[in-house]
Image: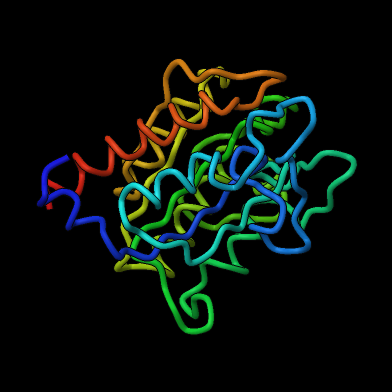
Length: 223
């Protein structure tokens, strides 16, 4: 990383909207479901082992909010143990409104979801860029469009990066790419992430941090 790239990221305020991959006990809102730490993945034992903590530590950025909840979908077709308010399209309004967090707004927003939509066979729907109804938001692609519309409209000065997990349904990945292009949101498709039980190991967390840091360095060096 060059000095210019390090300077470009240092001090930036980061907000995360995510699922289990971005949780850690004590680091997410109290009403969120937590996955990490977990006995079956003992090497992710500290918040410092998570991808997002590694990222902010390396770059000198600081975490404004981490609104991540395990098992949650982007769309409102949620798992039986969840309520509609747990969906990304609902939680986004708690941490990514124009009011920010105690008046602070993010410079960088990282969206990392869709895994549970893919795993639970949530309705796909179609890309839709306006006039969403409650029924529309029960499907993945219109809900993802609504998510990007809200986040970019409420945070016009923030840099938004959508992170796409590995092993997701190709039609969700393609739809995410097209929606991101429509809203001028940058997209990072992860590759070769080490996992156990469908979730990143400590190595996998480092791989996510590496790939996200590399993407951000390249994007910010072009500003």
